Image (cartoon, rainbow, N blue to C red):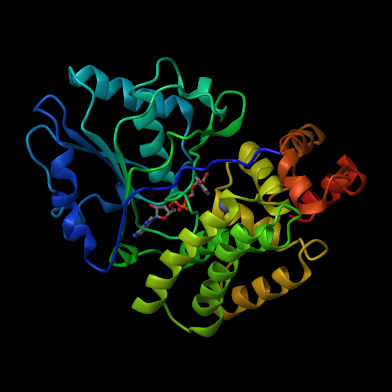
Length: 360
Ligand code: NAD
Ligand code: ZN
């Protein structure tokens, strides 16, 4: 038996206001004038001077605003890389992603594509990246995905939605400043936070569970419960806790796997472009059969915070469209195996998936 040897984020700073230390963190990594720092920033922050004015720009450093309305696509990653490569004669000193999972994934992917030839679509899969990327830094502004700790960057390509999973993918540095979570809209706070809650449930009830994953998953689940069940409002304490829940949830799935909700949510996302957080909620809401306690608690949290879970997404779909979603979901074999064991195909037939999607 061979055990997987996982890379981890080697440096992390945590604390309210820690964003102000960015200059001190980055300066030792700076090359010459032709080698700037490039900031990929969620365009929701355009004009928000309280954040933008604190980005420590010098020389040719650049801010590139990117919309998080759509999940990252390989064609956009390639275009950003080409644009940077055209402007500077040397590779940048670093790529810094500021935003949610979308921007964090862009930063990881662009950093890798600046030192690896071809299209990012060529690297969707496991361990296909050959060269170390440019130094890259992740600064989350919404919590839940675990993208700040993970070994992947999830991209939608011409043929598949699949991450660039590699030892070079994790960030070299993460800045966890809970103050940056100010301003997240309530529904989105819930959807992205539930990504973390669902990571925990899928990891802790899965057949791949081990003491490593359990230790992180249990802590993360406790923190999610404090944030979403015990508190009536989003205060500083709950921001701090959700940021750490996301981190631990990401660590938990690193050494296990996600499950039914993620497999089905990938199908929705591939066909309909449904974003990861809300897609997971739409699916999880219907998964009592697989995760009875988790779904019961989830429904309590939905009611407590008055969240809208969209319904009726699949009501007008054609047979062909259902088939596409079912194909995507079924292709995620490790997720099903983690959720239901080696015999998962006995329960999860195409008909079963169709009837489940019809409820969403
Ligand atoms: P997101 O980055 O898509 O952002 C969601 C929304 O919140 C956007 O409208 C964004 O503009 C807004 N927002 C973010 N921070 C804000 C702030 N401080 N104030 C106001 N608005 C703010 O959300 P997400 O749920 O964090 O990320 C989803 C993405 O993460 C998907 O593309 C998914 O594939 C990816 N993902 C990656 C991993 C991984 O391990 N790499 C894991 C899970 C999900
Ligand atoms: Zn997830």
